[in-house]
Amino acid sequence: MEPEEFLPLTVDAGFYIMVHQAGAQEEVFDNAVYAPPGATTYIGVAKTISKNLKEPYKNPCQDHWPPELEKYVVKGIVYTKRLSSLFRNIGGLMGVYLGYSSLQIFHVLDVLVDGAYSTLSGIWGRYMRNRRRRRGQGPRRLRAAIPPLPEEVMQRYPVTTQPIYGL
Image (cartoon, rainbow, N blue to C red; front, side, top):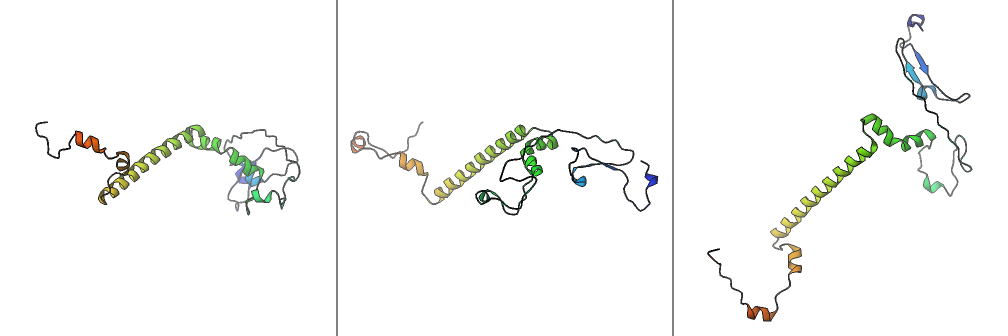
């Protein structure tokens, strides 16, 4: 193809390249690769076999759902094979775009969430302890955990309140 062969009114020249099954009606602008003049283009091809479900699912689409399935369908969302496969492959796509596998990404997210939780729980605990201390309540668990000494122990070992010097 020579760009000089096109009218000067056209902005772009080139080809849309699309590989599809014979007889299939495909959307050119969604499923094609644009190749400008003088450029090299690589196309990845993957063979997929899909089997349509039996009734009540229709091929290729339907306007309504049976009453027993309507409770599982979100209103206003169009369900397609392409959208379904995108959600199934989101981990692989994240790995391709970010250069990491989805397992590594979720491991890092797990570590970040655990660290954030422990930090926030420590901050919240410190805040509550300081709040109780300002109100004169003291730590809650020490009050409940230490019972008062029995009377016979108090008589046998008298408690002195004098400071001990020399330690």
